[in-house]
Amino acid sequence: LEKNNATSWSEFILMGFLSQSKSPSVIMTLFVMMFIMVLSENSLLLYLIHVDSGLHSPMYFFLGQLSVMDISQTLTIGPKMLVDFLREKNTISLTGCSAQIFFVLLMGNAECLILAAMSYDRYVAICKPLQYPVLMRRTVCLILTAVVWFCAFGALGPSMYVRLLHYCGSNVIHHIFCDLPSMLKLSCSDTSRLEKTLVFTGFLLLILPSAIILASYVCILATVLRVHSSERSHKALSTCLSHLTVVGLFYGAAMFKYLRPRSYQMPYHDDMVSVFCIIITPMMNPLIYSLRNRDVLAALRKTKLCQSLWRHSTL
Image (cartoon, rainbow, N blue to C red; front, side, top):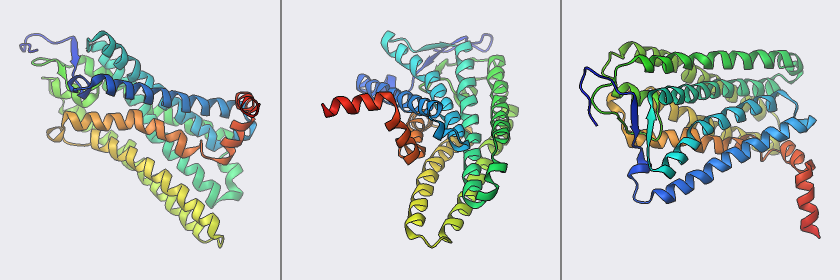
């Protein structure tokens, strides 16, 4: 649909790859299964951290925060996608767009920063074990978390700015949900100032945290490799590489999405990157960071649900 320059759209049509697929039912079923996995894995991790005193440590405190972010981001997108698919009407209001942009950016910003805090926690635990109780005491963890959420709420600015823009021409968003780059592309207002601000913000929220994470893991590997235990070195190397793989893919996808010039943006590629950031990464985080960890597995075995299932299986 097109509109002249005198008026502005207040409702938009979401036309992501799902609406253009030859088998949307299959893809939607796959998405629903992944949404359920994200919610189940992260909810289970939150429950275990809450009920097991052995998981009341800074590392699991930060992992709990990460799970809250992953659940919230999934709930921002998943229900809307499912409702639109069932009613076969992919429309969203400008207010709805603004809300989606806010929550996606809020949780994305927070995740970028909490991953850096988690890497710092691991660095202190392995490289400075004697100072760990002081450097990572509860007060420090709470302050770090407060700083993470305070900085993440910078998402409020762009989400409110979107409501002030003028939208003429097409109202079709070639994306599975409302995201900031898509809205800027539709606007016929001057968005150059916001785009420059986004590049600066992207540097603070993507480049700096990824540099901190990389430096932390380099120090961790250097410390572990100095230990003569080959088994411990191999295990630490495997853990670090798996963590760095997930973190690298997450930051790489976010940089690809938000730091590219507008002229290089392609709807299909943006959809794939968004699916990775909002569905695949939250699904992988609990598995990579915790659900294969011995402490978490021990806590899982101690839960009443697991014990009852074990008793029934042995009858």
